[in-house]
Image 1 (cartoon, rainbow, N blue to C red):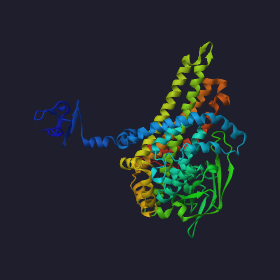
Image 2 (cartoon, rainbow, N blue to C red; image 1 turned 60 degrees about the vertical axis):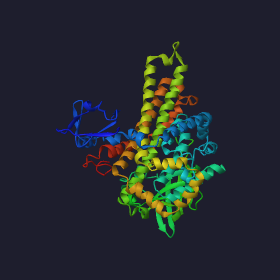
Image 3 (cartoon, one colour; image 1 turned 90 degrees about the vertical axis):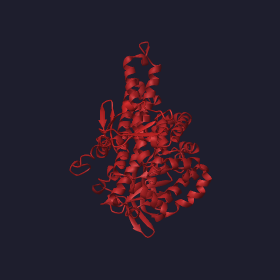
Image 4 (cartoon, rainbow, N blue to C red; image 1 turned 120 degrees about the vertical axis):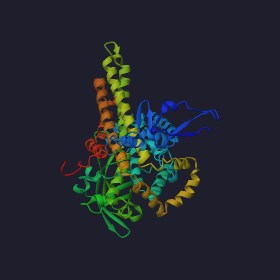
Length: 549
């Protein structure tokens, strides 16, 4: 028989070499697996027990912290690979036909008229179906895995980061909505986006957290209570009244729905955060100024003003009523929600950074392959070859970093459930009409929100939260720094041509520099890497406290 044979030796050890070619004469079949029962493994002189393996792989850096991609090859559906190839092909076609021809003219137009809004491009994105592409089929979208999103963002980012961000920030808003696990609201807004695609009226989602005096303070749970939060939510009958201002909200003026964070107690925001879905046109909600930025000009950064803006209970994504019974308490549940958001969104910014690094590299490579110095092509000068090699290494390293963070999200983060094989294949191969008929009814049941919050908040381990959040920050720092570095090297190679607008290098640099600042400055993200990936074995460490700021 072909199967498993158990060997037990007198000295509790077993030499694998001696068993490698073991042959079962009874049926003439080689044994395909050997199981050892309560013995030590001995291979080429190395002896190690199961208990030792378990203990040693927990040593920093932990095995699970550094092998997300390896684990994903086993645990995630194989269909994601096929989807990723298709998404990359679509992204390259879209970049060739839409983004690259428009990017320089759009940047110039935004510089000349900062009040201009790029609706023509938004319409193109909507026509291509990119705003519903990564919305699950059970919510009316096309159902591509969110794991594939970042390859699309990198590809488009090689030609224009602003135009990539006009897609990416929509999914930032969507990711924030998902992190509430309010299934009724997720279904409602998802179907608004799908309806907007069909009617030709784009429905985009934005995330509104940053305030005039609270940028980092509003993004980190430890800093909320000592910061200057000002966006207040007052509970009233059947809803809340919001007063305050949000700034630097990407695509604010272009968005239909805004996922807004406000606070019932401004001095204790960490335990009093409310997530709202506010629709453009709501009474008491208006747009303010558009920021005049150095780069990513096409992706407008908006001021959102709330003046006695009433939000009904049905548009509350999550508040303390939804967190009070969580096993980890309100404070830690709010921390989890922020970790879900930033763990995902910073991978998006990381893919922008990789796109900038690659775009700068490709721009410099093209220039070097066409330009002669002293009768010899620049690409044939050894110093230039070394610089181009460094640029290639930077771009490749950036892609590896955000891919690892992407895998962390797929295994432990925001789209963990969607990547479970049974659910993934159920959605992939079930006809959308059946999904609509069954699930649209199901999502309106409050019990579904309770179930998903139980699964995604109560059952998420602290180590998984740290892994997702930590890799988000690690990738964000590495990728955005690589993007800026490659832009500087491209201009160094190209000389005076590099600072000309029509040669693209200076635009990529202006766009890339913003990446080091938004979604948490790289300095803050370095501290978060320390908090999530370095500090856990050292309980005496202080992070984000009055003593070390």
